[in-house]
Image (cartoon, rainbow, N blue to C red):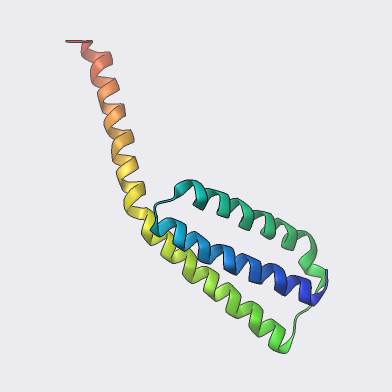
Length: 108
């Protein structure tokens, strides 16, 4: 893997993270999951091969810029899915409570 290959992978991950924000904004959870998987694939590639590459100067700064953008996108996605996750948690807890009441008292 060359220096340019590494930066190309980081740029692709940056584009995917931007698309993840868009998917989360649209509550398109299936697309969000698919995009997360693609990012994960890129991370695996970098883990396997990036350690042989040393970036310096502008290339290193470009990598830092891309990582900062991905972190910002990740924060935005988490902010967007937090209410949905809380609602899902309430639903799961409510279902669990219903099940316990039903088990304890049976059908009325």
